[in-house]
Length: 382
Image (cartoon, rainbow, N blue to C red):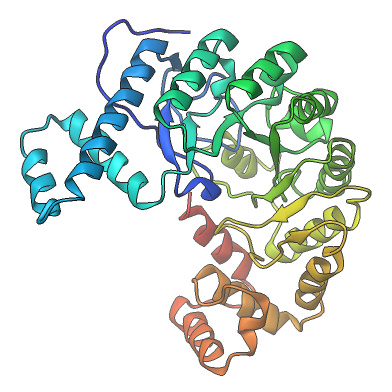
């Protein structure tokens, strides 16, 4: 792990979960320490490094000062003009910190997301120092969140996890993606089902909210059933607070795309993906997780609900799609992938229906090319 000695100013990384849209992003690490999953290209060519704790603390202090200035200026006439004039004298880094602070101020300053891909790889005592400083500067914050890998969490002791929770980290997002060992091995995830379960249970035992991610389609045609069944079984053993759906997309720059080109991986189309998602949901049993489909990649963003009570509501949505005539399925797929439809019932709206039919004509979509067309559209969102 590379560590830089010189403070380079306030930093923010490239991503955060959709649920953290209103959160302040604080960069604790740069990029991903593993960075070898076949389906991901986000940090391609980038070097992983841990930012020194003091640098992160300086970032926190910068945001705190900007918040203080914004709050004071907000009490005076022409406060926006005052802030604009102040920005003119700032360095590029200070401007970045100021804009992050202003956006967070406008969002209510309730939550913070720690970046990048796996903050938990930081030594526990260093992470605790950062968390404690956050609490000191921003006592009003009620949620501090981070991404983590199961492989990393499983190596933390129960005591370490409890101390991290006590210091203020109260939600962790883990990209399980799959719990089928054959899938995990093929995509080079460097984790197995057992480790996923150990890590998930360790997070829950520490009293930290847990979001686990499931990726329909990651097993391709060969392992679609295993991807659904094994992942559902792992979720049942963990009982995470949230199960978040992230449909597979395969950008051309990924190693997985090369596997497609060579014939080693046969991707699922939307109809097959829907069947896999249905199988997954049907096999979630004995848990109280909330299922969230909060990503534009998902065919069904309205598949959203609390288990077990809303399980039937969610499966009914998918069943209604699977029961459609193939031509109507194509209409929904095109409407969804072009942003015309947000939920399955939108297909009943005459105006939206007309727009979706026009999109079919404009894009030259047919029953013969719809799967290829939808895959290309999905790649655009990555």
